[in-house]
Length: 414
Ligand code: ATP
Ligand code: MG
Image (cartoon, rainbow, N blue to C red):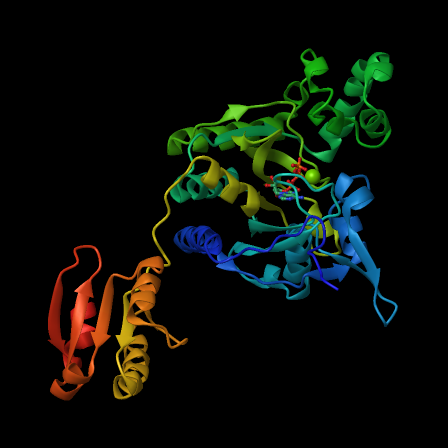
């Protein structure tokens, strides 16, 4: 009997995992500079949290969640996104009691039952940030800037920022009527998904991948904004302009989650088949109250790391060589072998990446290993060298050889 991974899941193997580490380190480093701090929340939460926090009429909750009942008869769901859990933790741990805005980030797996394809998995990873406790448009702009900086600093080219304002629930309710008046005569030409969305969440119809081309003359929510929404949106745009962050306005952009208010934005890039969105987010002023907390406003994003990494590969972006070995140690004879075991231990303690043979192979095979592992140096210890307290060091790039004292090996390698 043999086993295979479940559809929509991936094994991230050495050779590829270095890209992941690189991207995750960048995310952490940028968050440090923006003064966002990491939060780690559980991978499953009560099912009800996602119904409240993500929205009953969203694709995620309607079709994509992994639900289960545990042995204690609790209804649980594997988290399909990060915001709801972070907000639950924010409320439960009373972070709102702190005087400053809570600036939090997370990196980790999310789970959605989707039809697996390139860039779409059932377990995937998101890097996300949430800033809770202020309505300042500068915070919306900061969050967008952080995401944009992430893509630029990992080395991606051509990532575009699209922004929109989805207003307040009141603005949306009024716009909904206008939109329905526009959509109703077209109803029969729309795809089945859109027909059902029309009843439940008509704004999402505008975002439909299938029917989008039909909506060039659709009413714009931006024409329905009230004074407060208008002002908020123009300040966000102003801040982005001041920071020199390029953006485009897309009045048809509505996010797949129900909780957004005011700013909604997406990061887009070409290169993953039919998929063009690599991340998105927005402001969610009602969410904390919706899940039973105090009425605290927030803004955040979630970025897909699989898609980021696929784009890095697609654009053949170089990442620093993280898997290069400092030294491959070769022992000739039993006494030397014993010494090498000790030396490798000491070199590793000194912070060097050191490797050796464990299979009793001939010197030639060991040299090949050193090549495969891209060792900077090979260190060869024979009986004579051992007696003299010396070792032969070969620099692999140049082929140059020299003899160094065993006591000075770590320094010679640094
Ligand atoms: P899509 O329209 O592609 O289904 P979405 O609106 O469902 O995206 P969000 O919920 O906004 O996506 O999640 C933010 C990001 O997380 C996406 O832009 C994407 O990069 C990533 N993402 C979402 N679902 C998946 C998935 N099934 N597999 C891989 N990445 C995903
Ligand atoms: Mg989706």
